[in-house]
Image (cartoon, chains in turn blue, purple):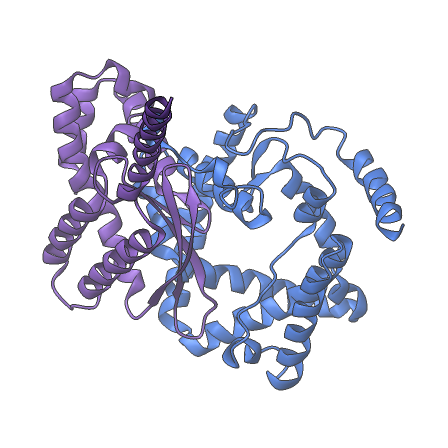
Amino acid sequence: MIHYFFRTICSGIALAVLAGCSTPPSSNVIYDPNETLNRKIHNFNKTLDSKLVAPVARSYGKTVPLQVDRAISNVAANLAIPGEIVNSALQLRLDDVVINTIRLTTNTIFGAGGIIDTATLIGMNEDVKTDFGETLAVYGFSEGRYLEVPIFGPRTERATYGLVVDFFLDPIGNLLPASSRKVTFPLYVVDKVGDRNEYADAINGILYESEDSYIAARSLYLQNRRFKIGSSINNIADLEDPYAY
Amino acid sequence: MHTKLYTRRAITAILASLFLTGPALALTKFEAESLIDKLTNDIFLVINSGKTEKIMLRDFERIFAKYADVPVIARSSLGFARRGASKSQIKSYTKVFQGYMARKYGKRFREFIGADIKVIKSQKSKRGFLVDSTVTFKGKRPFLVQWQVSDASGRNLMFDIIIEGISMLRLEREEVGAMLDRRGGNINKLIAHLKTMS
């Protein structure tokens, strides 16, 4: 009953937002009708990376000690948990709600407000990373088009709407005084710069060493996103079969 | 009457034995898992060997040739273009492709120094088994690396690596497809290009 109620309300809201979310692509298909525009945005993102983000990330890597970098990403991950709990609840995945609640309380109380990932250190491997894009998927909305979003990079259409909703959903920002944004937003940006530095080899490989960085980024993103949402590879029938031809 | 019955029984027995002996040669779950066990062991021995990059890359190519179904992976990476390719083109493409793969992925393996890999389980798939393994970096949560194993070539070989949902086979088909597009679909130009790639 509750399930049904939730479903009706959420589909109603989402339907209004997602009127444009068209054509359900089957699990291994790439639906990219806006390729020309996407490629332009991709080139913009690439320029932004090579001129600004990558150099900043390089000097970040040289100056910021590893422990500080780790602390920043721990705090950022901890701050993201309340929003993830809301999404898990909307997805009616109560075990995920429990996992992240344990994570949040453990790291906030015994990890100096999230600076230390105590939960992982004491052997908790379960971690739930989720977002409103996944919530929409749970309610049956199709992935939609492939989009390259300025600054954020590759997204599905569904994940893009999710990005917007998650921004407004942000329970931390709504609970803490407005001034806290002055801290949380820069923290988010610094965390992303740290990621750019940590995964430099992988990101450089995609953007600057592949034959067509647009195609490489699209393939990597879609495959990984579908895996995370549980709509791909877990499915044995979707595995590659090179012996078939 | 009796002879007829015996004949029928004999035929049934022969038919049954045909079906029973057939799968006995097939790849087992244990074989699939131990193949990936050995393969990952070999890779990590090289990763943590402290040898120079040049020697490591040569070692990776040897491991790739030993454990992977290189001809099938190479052919799959050509996508539809394989249909127009001649036998000799496929042969020389497979050779340069093997070196290209070893160099491309071998260079990335240094990111795995100090990591720990474990085979955890496997399940039946269309062509054999899908073997799950986890890679753990100290203080971080493990991530999933899956391997497809098959004996369709006549030997037990690995033919796809799937890291957190990303299939190497798919990725390379798209990458090689882009290379071909830029060279007007010319396979000889593609072969020449892969030779020059460091």
